[in-house]
Length: 170
Image 1 (cartoon, rainbow, N blue to C red):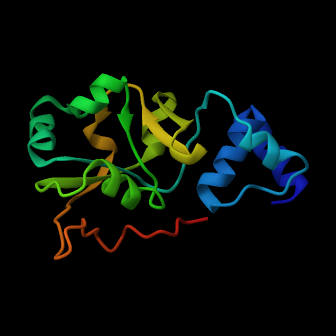
Image 2 (image 1 turned 60 degrees about the horizontal axis):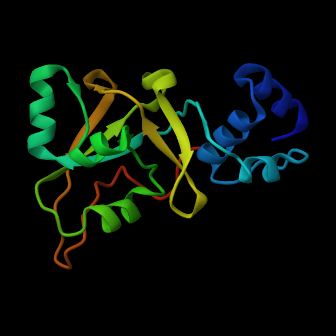
């Protein structure tokens, strides 16, 4: 990304933090624009961004089935307690599964179009200082682009569908 690209993106998205968060989430690398990497690493609070990569949420099948009847998913009990629905990127979701859903059966993986969530989706610092997507409000069913079972494999780890790769589109 060159300086002209940075200026165009800053004009489009506003705050520099938003620009650099977008670059980081889409490419996996901090952009090389002057001072951008340090600014983004020192990001405080949250930013609202859109992404072309899907974001992922794991929940119990029965929770997802119940959401079908009401037209939106309100989140798990942990999400409700935290005040937002937890999501992960493709790079983060396996570690999130191992940390928060280890050994749990009966899970589904929701692939969600983050851009469809608007300003209610915020990228916030979490584990290891990485930015994670958090949804402040219910998840509209129409934002879910795919639902896959998330079974356990022979070693007790979740077996992710092939479309979930550690590499995100740039």
